Amino acid sequence: MISTRKERIFNYTILSVFSVIALFPLVGVAAQALHLPHLDFSTFAEAWRQGHFSTYMRNSLTVSVVVVIVSTVMSIMSGYALGTMDFPGGTVLFYLFLSGLMIPSETVVVPLYFDLRSVHLDNTLPGLMLPQIAQSVAFGTFWMRAYFRSVPRSLLEAARMDGASSWSTLWRILVPVGRPAILTMVVLTTMWTWNEFLLALVIINSDEGLRTAPLGLSFFQGQHQTDYPLLMSGALIVAAPIVIVYIFLQRHFIAGMLSGAIKE
Image (cartoon, rainbow, N blue to C red; front, top):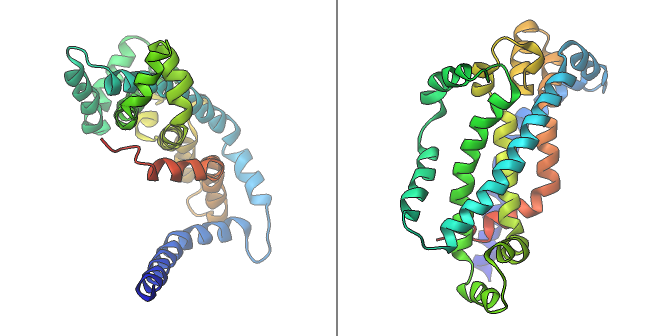
């Protein structure tokens, strides 16, 4: 009991130290943006107006919602097929999906741009969405396959004995049970999509009205290099949606990470 208590105190001490290290820069950013100790919110309104963040945030929201919805549905279906069904070429197909996680974006972004330009999808939001959907489905298939492989076979057999089709088994039985794993995938995909900078920089290279929030923040930073309160306000504006998503889905995210969603 004593050792357990000491271990708990030690663990909480380590976590507290790392929490302070992680939060200290954020406190500095907030202090600059709010002009502490005066607590002035006018800088946020000024950053929002000068940085055209209403347009950039709308673009990022559109891209993120489409990418997350499409990739989540496709990942659930592909993960279900690869995790619960035996069919010729299934293993090869899984490794094909897995290769999408192994290839860095930096190595394919230039040929990807020319491919998109050849079909007139450069400087368009669909052209920005498609590569991110492909990347997200690669991860999502790996994630959901691992979850579906961890589902007890007795559950699948019971569903078949009750006359449930594969479609019904997936959406009426496995998806509700696997909500923590699915929401964890949704949170990760949302974070990656919202924060994507390289693809947006290359694909949206001339139309200012199609810039996403991180890309717009980069240009905003170049225009106001020495106005630190304005820059910090812009950074907090861009980061706020992801923080809000994580706060609302935090419990499900942690449950998904701890429930063995990536166990074979």
